[in-house]
Image (cartoon, rainbow over all chains, first blue to last red; front, side, top):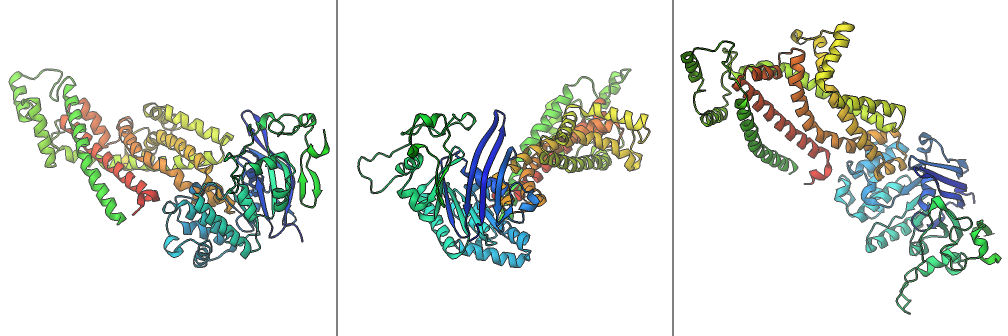
Amino acid sequence: MDELLSVADLETRFRTPEGEVAAVAGVSFAIDPGESLGVVGESGSGKSQVFLSIMGLLAKNGRCSGQVRFRGEDILGLPAARLNALRGSRMSMIFQDPMTSLNPYLTVSRQLTEVVVEHLGLSRDQARARALEALERVGLPDPAARIDLYPHAFSGGMRQRVMIAMAILCQPELLIADEPTTALDVTIQAQILDLMRVLKRESNTATVIITHDLGVVAGLCDQVMVMYAGRLVETGSVREIFYQPRHPYTRGLLRAMPRLDDIQDGLLDTIPGQPPNLQALPPGCAYQERCPQVYPRCRSERPELRILGPRRGVACHLELGP
Amino acid sequence: MAARIMIAFAARRCLSALPTLLIVITLAFFMMRLAPGGPFDQERALPPEIERNVLAAYNLDQPLWRQYLDYLADLTRGDFGPSFKYRDFTVAELIANGFPASLQIGGLAMLCAIVFGVGLGTVAALHQNSPLDYTVMTFAMTGIAVPNFVMAPLLTLLFGVYLSLLPVAGWGDGAWANKLLPVIALALPQVAYIARLTRGSMIEVLNSNYIRTARAKGLREGLVVTRHAVKGALLPVVSYLGPATAAVATGSVVIETIFDIPGTGRYFVEGALNRDYPLVMGVVVFYAAMIIALNLAVDLLYGLMDPKLRRP
């Protein structure tokens, strides 16, 4: 099947008062229609910036290069006016913080209907019916009574449901969820994840879940990309990443996951140290300072992503020997 | 339900305005009397017995506290008293006489301040750190830094004298040409301040998460700004409108005098120079009440704009 989205050699740089920083470097991947991809990494690993670059939503001081094809059409760096034909209709995005991502000065109905009025040219009444239908689908209780309220009358979980409804209004081919549950209570997180699972089953929308929670990935995704310091360090199917992790960082992340069946000593494994400063990356592997199995070679030569299979790759010298 | 809350709020605010007014009246009353000289002092002193009679006629021979209480009592009956200088007029008549001109100048200045201030500020914010932005902000800094009593003569000199395009002063029965310069001189500092305020809050809003959401929805940039950004960005401007009207009111005192406009502000200056106590007091009370009322109106407007304050 044709790829829905293909990204080649994406690089995203930010101009800062201290100089230029590459938040994303050399990232390549592809998503098939209907596929579900998990993107994992800690804060600052560049996982959100990859998709903000694709959506054309970088902060003003950001620039990106490389190639991004959506259904074969090159879309990276298109002017906003051309991107707007895709954004919100064929690809849409859900953000991390539902408390601030909805406009506090407009009613929920206004914020939902404007999407379909803009993209599908529906009348106000048709748009409203469509918005109610979407709110129904995302499980907002009593949408007819709530649709004319302002966001402040909604709880965090309800706002995230509204955000999701907004994103699926035009039945997009690609839905990007940037840490959709991070800002929510644990019980609400579970509800939102269930909702994402149902939506995935019911439609042929390809989804990207950006998260630092491997548990979310395990339950929702087919493919996984692990990012560290702006680069891909390992890619593979969920099964491969969870059962045959090949990068020490991926293994570290898996060990750091709390598990209900682990009752040995009650202590959670952690990865010592901190992610490196992107402005002063060491030569060689960015993970060298925290890696338990570091070779001398890792300090001088940056490991490229080695392709191990159609959707499998790892950027590490470990298996190649010192 | 919301309307009832609004009315209750307005009523409470009106009540709390009374102590403010009392303080303003008291301060103005005693400051006026502290100034040396009196309303009937002239180059040549009046014969003592005539002076005594005149003072007695206006109750100025009473002790000060007595006069103060009398004045308050008159005020509660809505009586501003007679003018000492314009003997045929009451203070209320003089205020009513001057207010239409003041209202036109002040109202137009406020309108200019809002329209041009918000417009320039928005343009600057949308082109942040561009030459256009720097031009607008330089203009704004100048507008804030140059006081209106400097700006007004400079404008007169340029447009009235050198270019001979506009009358240098006078009211001309309210002709547009006569209003132009005073309105510009009065509005300029407010245009400048509102432009800076709008730019700052607009930049903040444009960087907010909900604007990113609006862009992610594929809305045209024009719609993102007008529908999603403007409302939030204008809230600080709305809360500044109260102080702005106060600034325009005080500014008009100077501007009306410079441009010789027969408004309330000019009566105030003449009243102060002539020690026309009731006239000065009348204008002070009138302006204070007006500014308090406008501040209340601004608060109600703010309540209408911010959905969080509208919660039933």
